[in-house]
Length: 169
Length: 169
DNA sequence: CATATATGTCAATAACACTGACCAATTAAC
DNA sequence: GTTAATTGGTCAGTGTTATTGACATATATG
Image (cartoon, rainbow over all chains, first blue to last red; front, side, top):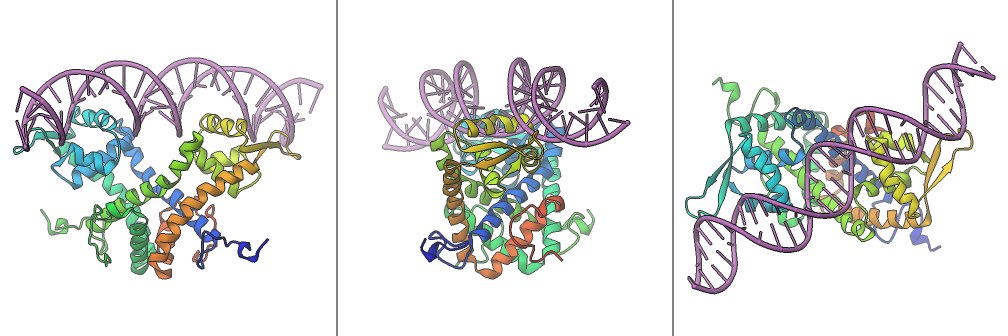
C-alpha cells in the first residue's frame, strides 16, 4: 500500500480534511435534519397533513402569489405530486387560488387566514428549535453555519434562500 | 398591536434574532439537505435502491457488528420497515447476518465486500460535496457549522455522531 | 388557425413508512 | 423446568409521498 492511502486520508480528499471529518458532517446533517423536521410533524399530524403540505404552506407563505409552475420548480416534484397535496389544501381552505389578471392561464397561490395561522404555528416550532441552537452556539458559529450550508446548496438555488447574500462575492 | 409585535420580532424570539434570520435558516436547511441527499440518489438508483437502503448501508458500515435492535434505535423506524429493506440487502449480498456467539438471539450485521464497495461509492459522493463546501468556507466557518448542527440534534443522539466531542463542555 | 404554455386530472406504480397480530428462538427469572 | 421477557422475523392492511404516461382544458402567441 502506498502511503497516500494511509489512515483517514484518500485521493478524494486532497486537503487536510480527514474521512472522519467528512463522515461526521454526513451524520450531523442526517441527525440534525431528522430532529429539525421532527418538530413540526406533531402539529401536521393533528391536521392530517404531512411534510408535503408543510413545504407548500411554507413556500406559498414566503412567496405570496407564487404560480403553480414556480412552486414546482422550487420543490422539484412533479405537478401530479403537487396537485394531490395542493388540492387538499385548497379544498380545506388553507390556500386560495386566484387567476392571474394578466395571464389567465396562471393560478396565483395565497395563504388564507387559516393557512397563515398554520404556517405561523409550524414556522414557530422550527424557529424555536433553531433559535435555541443559535443561542447556544454564538454569533460566530451561526455565521459559519450559514456559510457552509450555502455552500452545500446548488448554485442555481442559492439565490432562492431568504435573507441577505452578505457573503456572495 | 403592542410594539413588542413590531417588525420581524415576536415573543418567540426574545433575543436579537429576527424572524427573517430564522426563516433563512429553515430554508438553508431545506435546500442544503435536498441537494446533499440528491448526490447519492443517482448511484442508488442504478442499484434499484433508495435512501432507506443507503441509511442501513451507512450505519452498518460505520458500526460493524451492530444488532438489528440497535439499528432500529438509530434509524427510529419500525422493525417491519427495516426488515423490508434489510432483507433485500442481505439477499443481494450487500450485508451479512451473523448470529452473536454470546446471545444467539442477536444477529450482528456486517457489510460484505460488495456492501463496502457500495458504501464507499455513496460516502465518496457525499464527502466530495461536503469537502467542496468546507474548502470554500474555511476552517472557522466549518467549526461554526459543526457547533450549530450539533445544537440542532436532540441531546440523546448527540453522542451518536462520529467525530470528537471537541466542544462538549 | 396552429402551436406552445400553464394547469389539472386519471390511472398505474413504487419507495417508504406505519399499525396490528402473530410466530420462533433464545435467554432470564422464578 | 416451566414461565416470562427479549430479539428478531413475518403476514396483512394502510397511508403518504413520490413517480411516469396519457390526456384534457384554458389561454396566449405566432
